[in-house]
Amino acid sequence: MVRIIYMLAAMCLPIVWGACNWSSSPDGEPSETCGNFTNPTDGRSWLYAAWEKRYDGERVFTGDTLSVTVIATEGEEVTFLEGSISEGALSMQDTTTFTFRREGSLYRQVGINLSRIFGIVGSHDGVLLLGPVDSNRVTIDINTSLFSLRRQTGKNRFVGHADVVELFSDTYKDVVVYYDETPTYVDGPGHLAIFSSREGMVVTIYFGGYSPIEQFGFKLVK
Image (cartoon, rainbow, N blue to C red; front, side, top):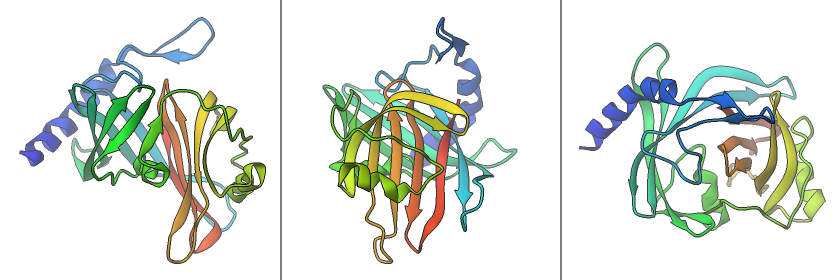
């Protein structure tokens, strides 16, 4: 049964992306009619481009893509399917499902979450905040060391807020910042994730681990 759901979701992905009616609002911000992240509808999809940065070089998109699709909404619970999309084929690989339960102004993780985009919430009590955060305000410059955020708050793990963030020529305002800088040879990489209640997770970055320079992540494709 699970295999059938995966196949159906994968086949529907190009249709879903084409069906979303993207337009520009009067202030120039993009808008769509498929529902935002705080009120997702069945079939709503987000597409992410994978990139990496090594040895203090430029960030390079790898050509790999991930999709996150709403496959079920039951009461206050929303289930997502995440998978790698095979180039030139209507199929998905390395799939996983994860579920959030709506509790007021937040989503709470239900069960195991192995998502490469949203799995970071496991380091933050399994909570994805949908509303604004009034503490741990930070200024993010992706071109500098991601370890520097700790110096702004005095914390190596926090959920905070940024007024504006520039990501690969895209601008996002009033975003929630998830930061966990505990990378060791045992723990693996830390992470920096930026969430918009309107657009969903706009970037998830993994850094550190064996090198403080190497980074890889996934950027939302608008």
